[in-house]
Length: 495
Image 1 (spheres, rainbow, N blue to C red):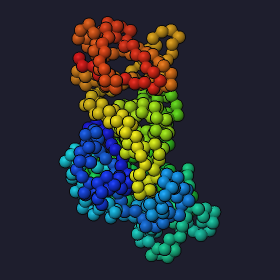
Image 2 (cartoon, rainbow, N blue to C red):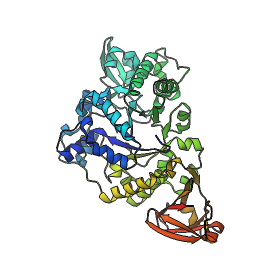
Image 3 (cartoon, rainbow, N blue to C red):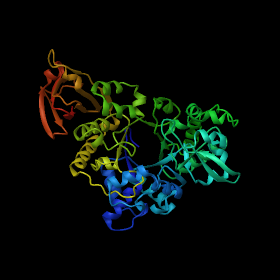
């Protein structure tokens, strides 16, 4: 996989529904027409993350259909939708085998081979924090989960459920992020129990044979100090001590011994990204950039881009995924498209969501079985354009530099609104200039490229026009740029 790879997240269930409608056939992962995968390759995707391929829990489906907030969300999206249109959450995994609704297990293995032959890597989910509420392990190894006695349950009855186990009735904890209500279709693993760690390690090692990498859900919840902070008050009473070692370094090391090129992508927040990278993760979510692009301004974005180079190389840049609101709605249409250009041309892994590149402005619940929301063809064409631009080798094998933008005149401080960086590879210079503000802005940018004549000839890949500037001027005071609100240049200079 090349540097700064492009990865597309696909909700597997919804995408298969869309393809079944398109082709009028009951498709499985093994029978998706090759042209669909080839089209993704032509868009420049190095990898696809097929989200939600695993067998989900039957009980989780019943819980989803009984969850008022989810039912309201689905019926607000499609008033004619029925409860039959709601599936169990993909994050309530009953077994790490292909969901029978999507095909036979061997189809997933065959798809892996097919994608690799096309030059596309396959990423799948690994949910480390919890398993489904009715997972077989809850019966055979209740001690692999967080438990409480009936007296303790009285004080937190919304955190626990009764489970029938081989050892009798036990009160197991729902999976939980300490900052949010419990996920009541899941059971919380006990990471201070070596048996639970061993089970999850063995599960992970099986995945190294099925795909090229895993997107690991809510990684920070299984870190020792976080796990202790959330559940330590119970674990200490039960004789569980905090392990000396973390789970992840050992797990990643074991996986890479089996498959040296296996890639780990972490969903992680709370400022723990660098720490998780040091444990061996190849990439970590860059939610900080997302928040700065959405809520703050160009100076805050610029400050973030001055972070340590290795950290940036391992960051996952995104403005949309299945958890976030559609970028068109969250950012506003104009700003979202500019933000997409930012994330498409920075160092790190560049993550796109299928609904995002199709121009879908409405959030589709991940439990909804259909993909019957209209997209916007103009938005799709825009993404096709920037994906083609960012597919150029310079954006993957070149040297990246954050550039300063100087003011054009005393008292004009609009240069602060301009974000600018370059990619240099051999005799090619790419310059991305973005006015990340609602104000007409000007600036001058230094160009580090040899002079091959009296003029520099630039090609603006967004506007699809050539223009020339005197080399002496560009080398002296800098390249003058003037951009309207949320205007952009992607400049190509061959020298």
